[in-house]
Amino acid sequence: MTDDLGPLRQAMSDLSEHGGTADMYERTLRRSRQSQRRTALTTGAAAATLVFAIGGTVAFATRHRPDPPTPPGSTSTSDGPQNPTCPTTQTLGTLVELPAGWTFASRAVDCVETWAAADVQRPDAGGVIYLFHYTTGTGWRFHDQGTGWDCKDLDLTEPASFCTS
Image 1: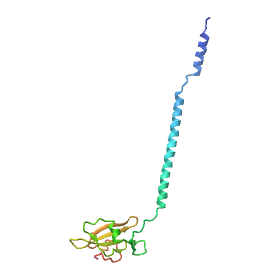
Image 2: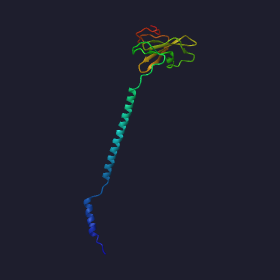
Image 3: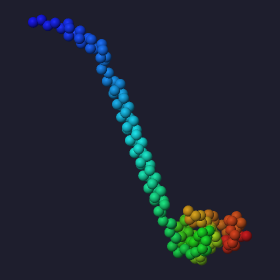
């Protein structure tokens, strides 16, 4: 039995000339790029959702935040928004740390507009005045210590016992 493979080889040769090569490289690259686009799109959408969720939560929380509480023991100096409630010496004591032996005097805090003054007793010397200023949003803050200030420098329109002029 003799096999004549000549015609079969010729037929295979003809097929290979017309069919070209089976190139999987281009199809692989196209599929890879498609996967990269899908991943980028999904990641971008997830990031946008996260930003929206955080931003919405912050906006909701700040919008529904209650007003700060009024310090205990405070008394009102006036009804207007320009004149906050006058703090007590206990409230002012939480804003500053007095040196050893120094204490706030027992008399009431003197409040005029957005300013509050409290006498401080020192063991070795005369008294000194601590001056506090109120700012909307931050509340009462220590401003200065001394024996008196010029009311014009403090932009006061009313007379105050802690002013020298």
